Length: 68
Image (cartoon, rainbow, N blue to C red; front, side):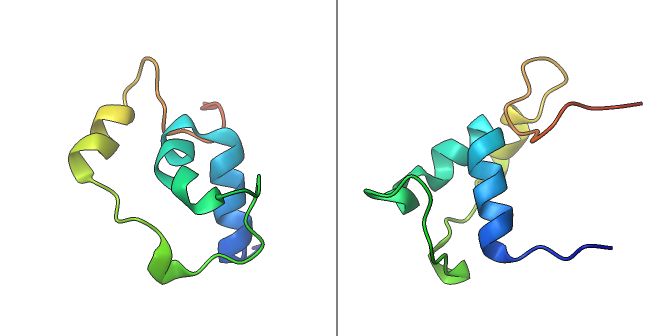
């Protein structure tokens, strides 16, 4: 099993998930992708907003299509 760094995980979320792009956008500053990401600087996910974004139709949370 491949292990991903925090930077790889956040970068993938920024590129593929509208939800995470919105909450992580303040991390970007001038750079399109931050070089150094500190866990303690990541925002706490609001659970209500998270579940509102995680719906069967118009899901804004997923980072790739669902496959059966």
